[in-house]
Length: 112
Length: 113
Image (cartoon, rainbow over all chains, first blue to last red):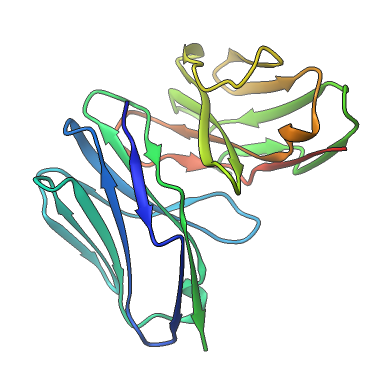
């Protein structure tokens, strides 16, 4: 089955700095890569996703990059704000599978 | 739509008791997932349903865990008997098809004492 590794487990930055979270996956058949944000006491919520036919995708301060050859994808948050503080999960879904496999999560702390 | 609705939000029970967690998926979604979240293991998929039929329950940790989906708008996850190591946050999620966004409920925080 698919295996997703996520690093770092904790990331602490100053407000205004950039934050980068990296994930690797094992199944070359994976072609859908969503990122979820989980705020305290809530369920994970999708913030951005990318499919294997795209190398990069941006949405305001958030961007995701995908390198299928190396089987890794990353989340980039620029100009971080305190409200970005949360746990972020990456996931991968093999083609034809409806089961997203999640990484272990990254706790992002943005200090004012 | 109100999103995925889970109940209860919090459950505290004594070891050995039966616990039933409930989930109402988003109307029209064909897939329903049950996840367990712990610090040690992160988000683990326990079981998922497609059109009310269990497809993969390989993540269910033990026979003490069972899940049902009697109709398209309701699912339950039951633990009988419960043990302290079952303490975790349990999430239900639904999606209308594969390779798209999964919508999560608020979760049920289970504490077994």
